[in-house]
Length: 102
Length: 225
Image (cartoon, rainbow over all chains, first blue to last red; front, side, top):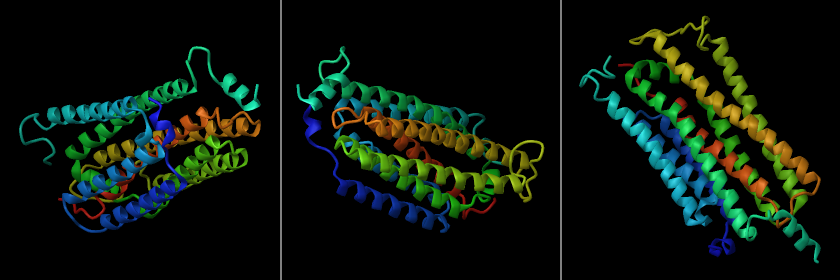
């Protein structure tokens, strides 16, 4: 249980993550000016998820947290996906093919 | 008894076995609160998704009114504030009171800058009659219903407004922490409030990390169908 107490992030880790976050922000802004069709939202969300992972794992120190905390965070993501997934499976299947076409 | 040991004993509540257990419990409680926050913001992200799919053209038209430059600047400001927050926690754990106070104040200052830029953006939308309500008057026409653009702006103001409210609350908590730090109430043994506020602050940063692309970026180059 106390194994994580000996390990932890260093100042070097923080500045590395900071550089990563700024670079990813620059990339996502740059890509938004390029027409990629349906790929625009996908690329933007993948980059956002990379940024979120950097913040959660290193700034929020989830990487050095007990496993029980990781399970809590993982279950939160699952519930969010259930919320989005079940809602969309409802809306997208209401009167096949008419939703969203306008 | 050694004075730092005394502090440690004072910081330990009687129903915990040791500081380690107390710290893990406090941390778990904070994470569980953040889980409820994920679901709270998740509801709004879900509404965004449902309406984006339903009223795609209105969504494209609405999101192209966003000021990407100000949004990007604010993203950078928020990332910087997360770094100063992380440094505040780092120096709290080392028991360095002076640097703890400096970085708490820096985090608050960056939070205020973020809110200031947000206020400029809100004013731009206000001046362009893009605030939902009786004065809403969308200046562009196309293959969309302006009422649907109004739904986009309603969600824009709801999501960024709730995010800004979280920032305001965060700045208030940081002010309280700064006061306590000035009074010398945090030591290398007792600094959980600083660490837990850090978790909250980073969570608010993560929310913005998703708001920025969804509201500003993903439809910037898309054409109306």
